[in-house]
Length: 298
Ligand SMILES: [Zn+2]
Image 1 (spheres, rainbow, N blue to C red):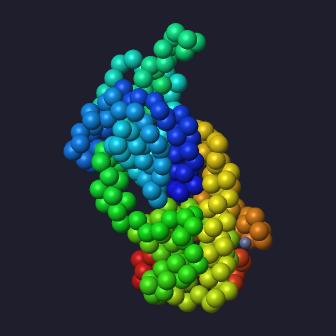
Image 2 (image 1 turned 90 degrees about the vertical axis):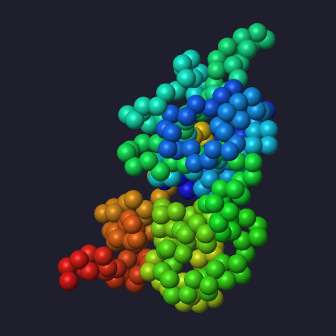
Image 3 (image 1 turned 120 degrees about the vertical axis):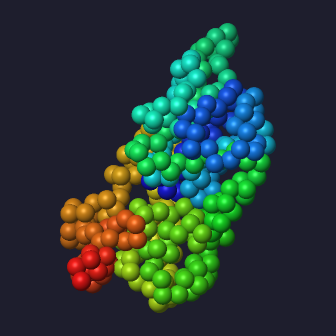
């Protein structure tokens, strides 16, 4: 799933490609992906792209005052095409295409290419959860209106993090970090990564951190996300997924060696999925009990 660093890099890449270009039309191939009806998708036809930004994990293409907002969910992605097919994209359940944004043809005169560039918004797999919105104000999207502070924003100080953790009470820190209404943009992967960087148990109660631990966690959030954004910046959309995967220390690496201490990366179930961690680095060498599994065995 793309998280803050990947969506930030996607937004930057698309900003460079799309700004000041007219959108000819937007084809919807997966009807269930479009979550709004007013303004209609056709309202984007003939608009001029002004900016591409990010709100948490939501991508925002602003065109003539309207916002085309995309939440890529678990398996969504965006692919730039130098030349889109001439025929409009049609609904096809076997095709990962959810929608296609078609830009104005580059005129062949004056050294132009004569090609019609565009974006394919795709979603792999059968569980469809990618969401597209057309709105006049990004805050009309409920998921954006509910977002907590952005951890890379200047206003995200250590005092802000402290307050968030106090308010969360005894909730496990892993869940607090990836809850979008609490902090925007951190998902399953980067919450594993920054807890590993902070040498902290994912099950630690949120309000139990010492001052030193709070500082360590704060630094880990800023550094892990900041470094990932810095590495991703300037990469094309097609290169981002590989870049993310190759730099993760523990997430998705069950059974591999921890790059810090060499212990084996472990996995434990968490909420609707699983998390990865290093027992030596994060839990004093003691493996975490898989609560879901032990409940089943009782
Ligand atoms: Zn380790």
